[in-house]
Length: 273
Image 1 (cartoon, rainbow, N blue to C red):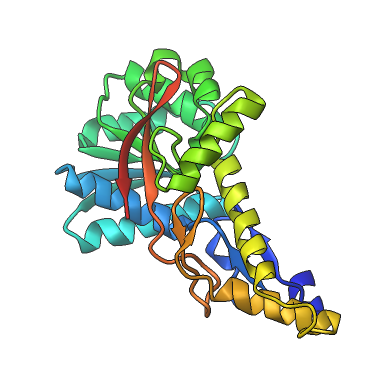
Image 2: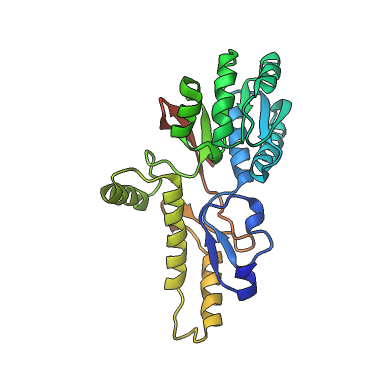
């Protein structure tokens, strides 16, 4: 609301909810959206011949509902069969009822667009029941330390979609960013650090295009920056090359990383567009 009412160009680096930029002319997004994550998960499953699925999602979380809907739509459209949709609630600790239903259904794939606290406990109970089907979530479970703490060995093999993996730098600038980040902070950059850098680069690139002499008033300068943001094309960034759809403010054809947790560490699995 503030961005629109003041006509202030604004960039969100990590807000994945599709509604964030909907209807706004002054909000631009550096990251992909939730519906894209769900689609990527469906593509991954079908690519690996996992043709039946169960979806476990949180009815109270827009994030969870959005990913679940996108997964189901893309999965069914491309030949997959959703055997069951099972509901949980944030804060739940007992998932044995859901696990029992999954065990009876024998799905090839389990999609869990929920958050890490519930995911960890769900995984522990799922594997304890002898269900070994592949499990994938969204970036809401991108916390291998917490998952390992809650799920123990049951966290091994769980996958999730994410924005970036430092093991697979997609651009020369990305390689330099990883090197500089590690030198300064003593660790590899997270996906949030990478999308944060992308947001900065979007803004910096837009400002560079706006001559303050030609845009004498504050409003003219803001409009110029906003137009430049919305018409970004093939900008070399950390998570890839950014092109923004001027009508939606969202990135076009941005890849997603499929990551896997092994022994509490994140391992690159695949890159999917």
